[in-house]
Length: 594
Image: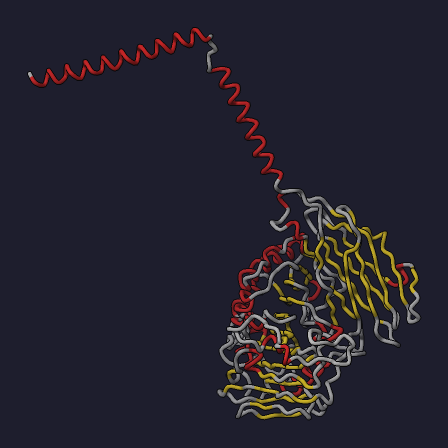
C-alpha cells in the first residue's frame, strides 16, 4: 500500500537517531522537515517529542512534560489525549498524501478526543466536561462549548496509540468545534508547553503572521503512555505543527503586505496561444524552481538548538534532489540519505542557522505519493425543510480495494433518515449503476439524536472496489430552533463537523486518516427584525389609544358662548391680579420708609 513519503522518511530518521521512546525515562527531541511542493508551495513540519517516566508523572515531578497540562490530565483522570487545531484545506490533488498519513491532522476548527478512566458513562462525561473546560482556559479556545450535543462516543473510528493495562475502565469521548477560529491566541499557549518556549531551537521560526497566513496549517498535541516489555512505562507528549506556505506570498515583507501585479514588461507569456496580444497574456510555467530561504519564508533565522536536545541530533531535514545546490550557515554539517532526495543538518548549539536554495533548473522532482482514497462530502437539495447528504469516495488504485471506517458527527437539528441510504458505483468502464447499500456498507453503527441533548453518531464500514467511485446519499430533515438558540450570524448557516475516515490496512503500522471539509447548513431562520417592528407598532397603538381616552376623560366640552365668557373672565381675573400685585408692592415700600 502507498505510504506517505514524509511520514516514512521522518519516522525512519527519528527511529535511527533518537531510539525507541522507552529507551530513556526522560528525554526531549525536536526536528523540522521541509519539502517544496508544486505550485510554489512549501511544506514545513515541526515535531517536538518529550518523555517522562510514569512515576515522575504521578508524583508531579515534571521536567520535559508541561506541568500545566499534566495537572489537568491527572485531575480529569485522562489517560490519553489528542487535541487538534486546523485551518485551511489540504489539496491532495496537487500536494499528494497528507503528512503523517493524516494522523496528526484534525478537522477544520478544533477537534478533541480522549480516553478517560471512569467507572461508568456518567462519571466519564463529568470528567470530560472538566477536561474541556480546563483545556479551554489553557489554550485560550472555546473548548468549553463542547457540551453533550457536541460529544460523541466512537466505537471503531479511533484506537488508543498508547499502552493501557486497564483498558476495560477507559471511555472514549470525542468532540468538535468546526466554527472555531484558530489564531495566535492558540499559538502562544502551544509554545509555552515546549521546554524552550520558542526562545531557541526550531520553535524560534514560529511567527503568527506567517503561520496563520498559510494555505493549510494544523497544530496537534498528543499525550499517551508507552510501556516496555519489562513493565516500565513512560508518558510521552508529542507536539506537531504542519503548514503549507506559499513561497512567493511568504517572501513579502511586513511593510509590503498587499500583493501588487507584475509589471507588463516582466511577464513571461506563452506566445503559442492564439489569443496572445499586447493586452492578453497566458503565463508560461517557469522551468526553474523559485529561490527561497528560511529567513525569507519565516521572516527570521533559526536560533541554534534547544539545550535540552542532543547536539548530535539532525534538527533540520530537507527533501529536494541531491543534485540541487543548498547553502547553509557556518557550523552546520550535512548528511545525505540514500534515497537520493533527503538531506539532514546538525546545527551548531548557539549559532543562528539559515538555509537557502537559489533558483535552479528543474531536472528531477521528488515523487509525491498519491492518496489512498479521495473523499468529498456536500449538502444537496433545496428548501428550508429538507435536504440531503452526498458523499463520494474514489479509489485510485487499479488493483486493490480500500476498506475504511466512515464516521459522522451530526448536530441534533440535522435529522438523517438512515432508511433512505442509497449507493451508486462507477466502475473502471465508466458505467454508473445503483446498487444496494448493503453491498458497499458491511457494518453500521447508528446512535440517533435527542433534541437539545445529543447529536447523531453514524459509523459505517465500507469497501470501495479498485478503480471505482462510490457515491452514498441519504435524506435529512431540518429542525426549527427556538429564537434564543440562533447565533448572531444565523443567516450565515450552521457548521457541520467534518467527517473522519479511517483507512484499514494491516500492512501499515501507522493509522491513515482522512477528513473531509466542514459544511454550512442553512436552517429556517426567522426575521429577527420583526420583534423590533412589533414593539414599535404596539407602542404606537398604545400611545394613540391612551392619548385619545385621556383627552375624552379630562377635557370638558363647552359651547362657543361659554368659551368666550370664560375667556373674558380669565382676562379680567388676570388684570385684577396684576393690580393687586402692584398695590401690595407699593404698600411694602411705604412700610419700609416709615
